[in-house]
Image 1 (cartoon, rainbow, N blue to C red):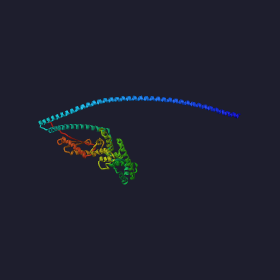
Image 2: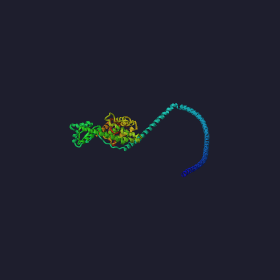
Image 3: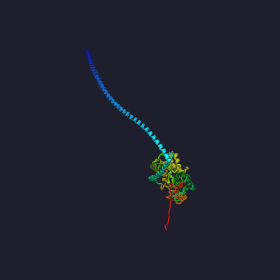
Image 4: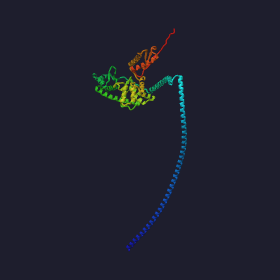
Length: 505
């Protein structure tokens, strides 16, 4: 019974769950059908809404397109109207131009006819004039042109004279102004040097050690250095003499090092000479670089910089050539700026104008030509090489910068106190200057003045007239240029004086 009850219960439970499941399935199918119908209704409504919106948008776009087309149509209509008006105006202008052209052609025909009549009248009048004057037209023209030519020549000569006088006056004023400005803006000190160097000694006993046993030390020193060592009665000093300033400087440093070291013998001399040589080479390079820095000239070949440094040990009439070159560079730059020339080019040429003096004892020829050849070999341009070559008139100056460098060189050399010379050579130069002027006929007395920068020549008035005085001054100036060497320039003044003397008794 218990088992039967369990079986019956299981079957009843199974049937009950089946009935419940079927009921749920029916309910779910009903709900699904309802949801599907609802979704179909919503989709239909969305479709109808979309169709309506699309129709509204199409209508709106169509309206906008029609509005735009109407506006374009109105614009085109307006343009057509304006074109039509312009065509009417153009037609009117063309018609007016055609009428004017017709009138112009008629006027030209009338002018041609009038010209023919005038030409005929002129020919008749010319024939009458030729008959009255007794001259042909060609003869009359030549006579008239001859008179006009003479008058024009006279007027032109007067005009040229006035222009030349005014130009000369203006040029003198301008030149003085430029030179004064250049000198004021560039003031340099100058160190006077000679061809000898004096080396002080701690005592006179050092002279014997320098000479050495049987003179071996002094012979070794002169042989190695290539300079003369002069040992005389000068107390506590010896003299080094050489025309090569670089060698003399190396020798001076070598001798000072030997004196300080105390060990003086040929091997030590050679050792210290090599050290001094290296030191001087380094100083030469530094002096050259400092010169380019001071003048703001860059891009030079290293060999040119070294040659510039060598000028530090070279003098001309006591004026240091490197300082002189730097001054010429500054003067050239200032003068070129005032004249509107190339200041950079003039400054570079001014700095390099005397580089030939650093090697003129090694190469034959003028230092200007030697310097130009050196600059040309080291890739300097022709615009730089030409002023170097022309600054002493070895060639004719062809550029403004060449003339400026020439003038700046003369200014730097002629500056009072810039150069010096020995008393003996100075007196000889003055005597030669006076003697050269006295050789000319009619010269009564000569006076060298202003340290030889001017010579005044008194002439006999009965022998030399005013015109001859001008020619005499030119001839003497030319002879001075050809026969003498001097720094700067020399002014030649010829004075002719007439005196009328009477005594009242």
